[in-house]
Image (tube, helix red, strand yellow):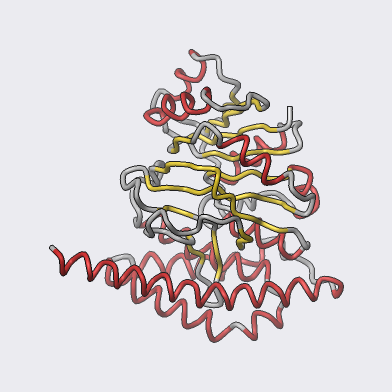
Amino acid sequence: MKTTIIIPNYNGLSFMEPCFEALEKQTTKDFKILVVDNGSTDGSVEWLKEHQIDTIFLPENTGFSGAVNVGIKAADTPYVLLLNNDVRVDEYFVAEMVRAIGQSERIFSVSSRMIQMYHPDRLDDAGDMYSLLGWAYQRGVGRDLTHYRRSSRVFSACAGAAIYRREVFEEIGYFDEMHFAYLEDIDVGYRARIAGYDNIYCPAALVWHVGSGTSGSKYNSFKVKLAARNNVYLNYKNMPCLQLIINAIPIAAGIFVKYSFFRKLGFGKDYLEGLKEGIRTAKKCKKVAYRPERLKNYLAIELELLAGTFLYVYEFAVRQIEKKAASDKS
């Protein structure tokens, strides 16, 4: 078999049945499924055992990174496809993902075309991007389905529904378990770009995504704090000192804007606590060693960060214009 589908689960019993029903309808059967349960207490363990699904049961919640790392290391196939259980996939999903990653050995990961489950006329993610402001974002989120219909390079794949070349993890490292959850897919995609690999977007691989299936909401204290901390890790680990100095002003501006945003939502204190924890513990991260022969990769990444900044501003402006137009109509 070519592919192992790895499904991390933490108290996701309500999502299990529709997720597995969609996988049973795949046009290709050249894959196996491995669930990694993160110490669930909602009946997931009993359900998995009852349905005799191949599962690794962990005694406690190790986060997304810890769970998928266990699965990746247990897999023996060339490709591993990570799939959140709060998704429903199209019948051609696995076949399209395998086809896309098989186009070149320099492709590390492929991101799917994620559509919002409860707003099926809107995109949820067309590949993840990163910016000079230190902001990661979902390309295309909230836009209608006429956008992002062509395959393209992206900064990283969204690990909620992405396929990876397994052997590359041995070269660049696995998902960083210090992250626990959030931005771990940007981090591993960043490391792949430094090493000279590509991350691409496959518009033919369709996924309908609930979103926040484990954390429960778009913004909450837990998510805001972890994301702020992990942002510090992300920049510290992957940017050489000179690049950090060059980008210090836009990163600082990004921090100020985000703090102002979360303060209005009542999460300003959580955001600052996350930043402080990130700064205090960043040196525990395994920093990517700078190699002179990879200078061209760093230069390409810097240009990607610049382009990602302009794309974020453009998409944000478009969303605001569309919201205003919809408000005026009502």
